[in-house]
Image 1: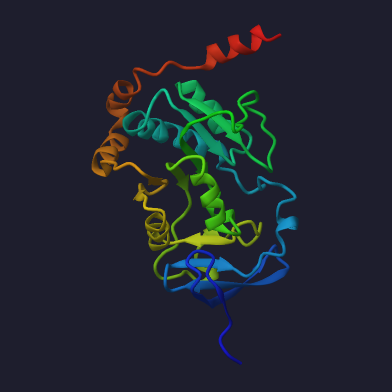
Image 2 (image 1 turned 180 degrees about the horizontal axis):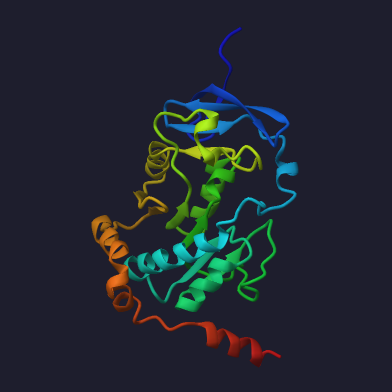
Length: 262
């Protein structure tokens, strides 16, 4: 038998079968690696309807800690390099936690998610009438994209600035038992990006790519990466307060707005 291959969902070159793993404790799924762009993908994910019976998995115990961390760091990023008066979209925003946190800080954030009910940021659902969007945030979503290029192009049609999180695939692709991020038990992660993959995507759309470890940025802007790393590293020493001093929390103004509509 010849080598099992499929077309790469990023660069359309040939991806070779890397390994087989048990997904949802019942399906033997093949994983394919593209040596051209460093992208790892599953075979066509026929199990997703079962995997998404709960859009947010039972094992996601870090959901609140993650949102609090991102809110702190992304606020500094936006206040430093983007407009504090701009409108922002949290795509695939889950229960609305991040949107509410960012509005509490003072940013005009809106929420969208096709699969999860908005519980925390009701009243701030995104629609096409809300524009222009300065930047999009989207956390722990890229690994869920079955057709990443199509999804990324949808985001780029809204804003050329995308701030996102995903664990980077190591250059030496880990064996199934060596990397927790495969999370075979819930079956929702079907796309895995190396740094080289994300650099390829940025180049494809004439964007700049920056990685800050726990989050990454596609942007039409040129960012001072060293300066942002300095700010993030020393934000507990008063820098954060200085950078965010012009922002006014929307917590009370949002409350007043809803009360006036009753």
